[in-house]
Image (cartoon, rainbow, N blue to C red; front, side, top):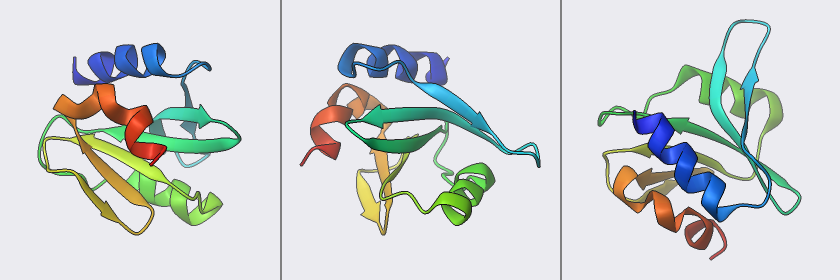
Length: 98
């Protein structure tokens, strides 16, 4: 249900519908979001754990400028990983455009 809530919020904020990504090794990123010319991989976690092997693999393969993880942790940026608390999902566009 958390993924569905995040998806509904992202659809309302961005012009291009989110997609998903699957590797040949069965890694899957929940959403791929386009913001301008940037492609942002997104993982949604319905707990405090934000460790995502798929998001890490995507980072190794493509080195995006920004990755997003939605979870129940506090707002925090660590390198190119931005953790956004689920309750701030409606602020995603504003947070990444800062």
